[in-house]
Length: 291
Image (cartoon, rainbow, N blue to C red; front, side):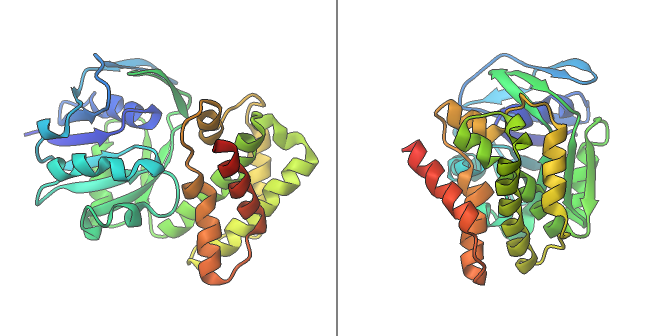
């Protein structure tokens, strides 16, 4: 009997993952979406792939599955509640494919924490229309090592997405957050990634990452002193016209993952008595801009 996987959120990440998983005859894929569409068409670095998974728009229409993969934006955690109520049975495992460092905390009120697997995802891409996605890189997914992580890894055995486990997931998650937090500058300025070539902007981003490093270390992550410079170097390697997701969301008038990317640094910094003035300013300005 095929392993039944339900994916909540058919955006760039959820749609790409669903399309690749649906290529396997050993997996049955269901997409949980707000809007119905016919099929997935994903332009990948390996060529275009298509898939026609079951697409459900009403939570009451689904039943228990083996795995739930949550690929919504971090701010939409509460919106998954109705889906989880119907999808999660006694043996269901839940993987959270979202930004930030609070994967388990967001869903602990809905699912037993022992059945939640946090995942750090790096699959760059954009959705141009429902079901139509451009996947810019095959990408990676990292999850904590252990029985649950090993089982998740097996789901992707037939895909080209590099899925791995880590014995120090806290560090992996905070390292990704260090890169994500700096991207809020583009959202604030509504300018693409090339703005990092301004030395004054790069200095602000370094300060944001230094705050992230300090808070991450207090949370148990092992982050190097040179991480701020690494973030700037990597950002300068990217195309100058690149648009990150928080920038795209603000430009389109959509909600932003501000709390998951920068607000969490400020909030946890307060818990640990660590000053985070630069991230706090960015959060305040973006909140005001969005009102």
